[in-house]
Each structure stands twice: as C-alpha cells, then as structure tokens.
Image (tube, rainbow, N blue to C red):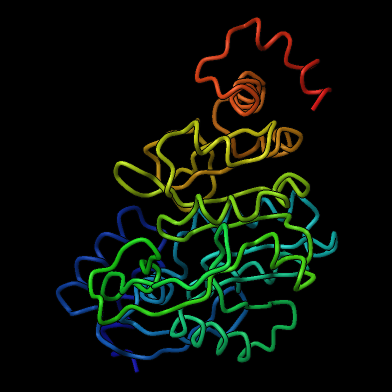
Length: 328
C-alpha cells in the first residue's frame, strides 16, 4: 500500500500549480519513488490497479495520468469524428499496461489493442476485468510487415513501455513473442475499420505501418505515433521515408508537450507525430497553431513525394497535382 507520504505527494501532484510536477519528481526520487507497491485509484471514472515501480503507473497515481497531451488529443479526435455514437474504432498498437486503451474505451465504440509482453498484458487484462469493459479487445501479438516470431527486449528498469523488438539491455530477460502482419490479422479476426490509430512500438513503427498498408489506404485513420531514435526514428531514415509509409493526401504535425493537445508544424526531431487525412484537417483547427489548417501546401508536397519520390517538388508539380491524383 502507498505510504502517507505517497498520498501527500499525490495531493501535491494534482494541484493546478506550474512546476508542481518537477517538485514531485524530485521529492519522489529522494523518497525512492520506484518502490514496488501496489495501489488502486480512480482513473477517468474507472478503477485502476497499478504499481509504483512502473513509470506509467507512477505518473497515473501521482499526477492522474501519463502523457496528458496524448490522451487529450485522442479524446479530441474521437469527439470530432463522432465518438462512441458514431461507431468509432480505436486501434492501440503497443498498448503496454493499457492506460491509453482504457481511457479511449470511454470515448469510442470499440477498442482493439495489441501487446506482445505477457507481463504488461496480465496487468492490462486485470483492469479490463475490474471494470467489466465489454468494448475492449486485447490481442497478444506485435504488429509487423510479416508473420514471424521475434525477441522482445528487456527495456529499461521501471518502464515496461520501453521494451522493444529492435534492442535489449539484458538478453536474459528477452521474451519470444508472435508478430503478425496487420492487414492479414484484421481480415482473419474480422476486426473493425481503423478510425484512430495510436502507434508506440519503440522503433518498430515502420514495419508496423508497412504491415497495415492496405487498411491505411482504405480507412485513412487519424494517426498518433511515437518517433524516437538516433540515426533512425521509428525505423525511418528520414521524413520522406516516413511520409511514403502513410496514405496519400495527408498532413503531418508534431504534438506539443503539455497538459492539453496542441499541434505544431511537423518537426522530425519531435517525439510525437500526428498524421491527419487532408479532408479532416479543418475539423482540427482549434488545436492547430497559427492557422496551420488554412494552407494546403504541406499536403501537396507530401502527395508529390509519395507519387514521385521527390524531396522538393516544384510549383509546376503542385499545379498539375490535381490532375495526376485523378489518375491514381
């Protein structure tokens, strides 16, 4: 059980005061915040059981949620696209212990989650059962561009979300997991269309997107994805390679860190990217900085890259683009 001091820090962490998170982080470090302690708390109208030795659960206990800007963006997207009443489906690839998926169960009709880690799945499933959620389905696989078995790395201590199919710190703690090609799995399991896609797979993003290529083209989902890495980010060597893995006629943005959702011009060095279909951009104008929704130039550039593989399309390319799209 959390100590009295843990509850005091939690109360401080929930205060709407600038800089309070940094104070709680520092005090938590002094007080060994990552001790292995189980807790139960309320989360978005649900009961949530977690552990203080895990990064996501620690944030949820002391601050109320982890990655608040991501949750706010997903909630905004769901509302703008019709929500549960509109039969909306949310796909969570790399669901980990399930915070994002549990949150979205209140905003959409169906949640389909994918998580290869047996330990993370066990905790996720426990919270699904605790809340008797009938609209959340968890599949015990990773998504990639082909069916295979792979080794899931150890990740960092105290951060289950850092486990990756591309690297490990401790080979003794690696886990053999199933990888499925997304398009094939969606058909075989008769899964719904992808309306909103969250992708956080620690460097495996490219292969996951390639495996979903057919459904990306037909469903044109709103996508929130993590992009981390050095020479490669998410498995992509550069921005052009990222764009060609998405559907045509899209706009890319960077999700700004903070408590609420705000989209900024796309920055390759940012950690969270958002892809919107061009036809939905204007609906998101309330969270777009400096009227980014008003210009179509970025979209034209992206389509031209997809068609021709060019890095810097000319204005002549842009003028002829409409006619060329009609022939696709």
